[in-house]
Each structure stands twice: as C-alpha cells, then as structure tokens.
Length: 185
Length: 185
Image 1 (cartoon, helix red, strand yellow):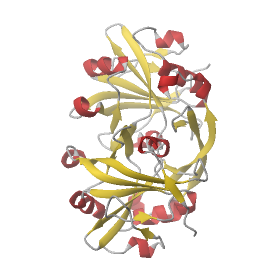
Image 2: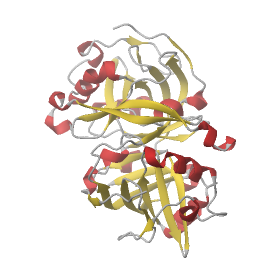
Image 3: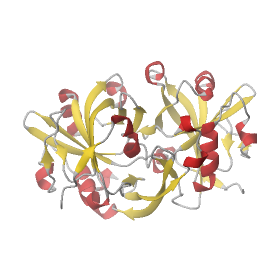
Image 4: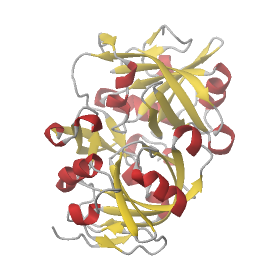
C-alpha cells in the first residue's frame, strides 16, 4: 500500500477531520516499544490551542505508555485500512508489534517521540495537555502540536463506528455555507 | 413534517447513535423559557452509566440554562432538519423562541424538564453528571437517563460537520463483524 504524500495543516483546522467522528488509530512510544490502538471516543475541545479529549481505557496497553510518555499521534485511517483497524483493536501491544503484525509503516514524527502511521490519511502529533479526568474517566486532553494531511482526496472515506461490528462510511458532502452567519462557520 | 414514532433504546446502546459523530440539537428549559442549540463537539465516555461529554460554549444562551437546570435533551437530527440545524446555530435563544421560529415540536420528556424535539430521529434525556471541567473548558459530562429512537430507518442519515459550512452525510454501512473478537464489539 502506497503512503500518501502529506502537507501541513493549520492546527485550527484539525476539527475538519476529527469533528465528524471517525475512528482513529493512536500510536505511541515508550522507550523502544511502540504501539497502536483503535479509538472511537474523542471530541474536539478547543480550536486554539487545538485540544482533543478522548477516552483511552486503562485496560489498554496504550494507556500506560501514553500516560508515561505524555505523547501520542492520532492517525486517521480510511476504508482501505478497515481490516487493520479492527485487527488492531482485537490485539494487545503487550503481545505483538502492531506495526509489524499489520504491515504498517512507522515514520518519525517531528514534535513527539511516537511514530506516525504512514498509511493513514492524516497524522496529528499530540502532547498530553491535561490529565485531570484520567483517573476518574480515563479521559485524556491532548494538544495537537503538528498536523499533516494528504492533499487528496479532500474528503476522505473515514470509518465511523456504530457498535456491534458495524461501521458507517463517510458519505456525500453537502454545503450549507450559504445559510450560515459568517461568524458561525 | 411528521413526527417519527419512537421506542425505548437500552441506555448502553446510546453509543450507536452518538459515537459516529453526528451534530446534535440540545434542548433545554429554565423556568418557562426553552431553548435549542446545535452542537458538534461531543463524545461517549462510558457505557453504564451512559455518559456523554460535550463542549457547550459559555457564549451560548444555552450554557447558563443547562448549567442552572442541570438537565438537557440531546436530540439527533437527520438531513431533513439540515436547514433548521444551521439556522438554530445562527440565532440566540435570548432573542427568539427557537421551537416556534423553526417550526419544531416540543414534546414532554419523562426524566427531565427540558422538552424533546419531536421531529428528531432520537431523543436522549440527560442529567448533568460532572461539572469538573465546565469552568476551564466549557466541558459538561451528562448521564443519559432515558433514550428513545425511531425504529426506522435503522441507520439514519445523520449530519457530520467538517467546518466551513460543509457537512458530511452518513454514508454506506459496512459490517466488520466477522473480524471482531467477540469481546471487542
């Protein structure tokens, strides 16, 4: 699978990709070990700084790695990576090397130590910004400090999980732009 | 516009509708006043209790109403309500009655004082569960205490906002069920 060429995305525009609710692949590093998990429970929380809140269950191997490293990368897969996304969720990084097991390409990030997943449509390098709700809800607040996105397609075929093994795939694009008050876009 | 007939949804299954990332309409009541706002920044946080975290900007008229009442209803619109969803976001409940202005039907909820929006595909009655991050991030954690969903269509045409006036509409449904380990569904 070829790796999409990417360009920088202004951090304020991270919401374009995360707000519609896709599943994402979260990559991490602690020492020499890397890991990947599949995640569906996340939300934008602020434009600037670009804050993303998300639930990473303490039952995941990634939980401790990300908490200790204080960093991760949120990677955006499309339908081409649907099988890998499920298989990554099925397995534990305590037992296998997920990059190797699933044929994914770790690329160096610039702002964090965790690797990017080369095959993904977008890569958002994140630093832990606030852990106030980690103990109680496994809820992490990250700041996206660098964002890279493939130029094409403009609207990727992202996967949106509905539970029970079923995904909704991103569908048609409609503009409501003419209806919006300018300040509300 | 006819009002869909709805049935109870087990609270554990609220994620089926919210996890894919649709915009929602949040209805509230404080005293005699009701209001509606459009919201896109939300995430599931727990299955049981069914917790939903979301950002409600303090600049919204709904912020104070929901904080003081400690309740709201999260309503799920589909493409039929796309225009109303934008117009609701353009206007302030401090100036107009949004139910009346946009021809929406307030129906009594059972567990909270805020009204349901009859035209929506689903209605999730919510109580404020934790306001620990309200001051710092405008981030509310709600518990869904009652959920009602239209039986058809099984997969509604929800709207997913990508910024800049553009929506992605929920697309095709694909099952990855055969790939999942049973515990991971």
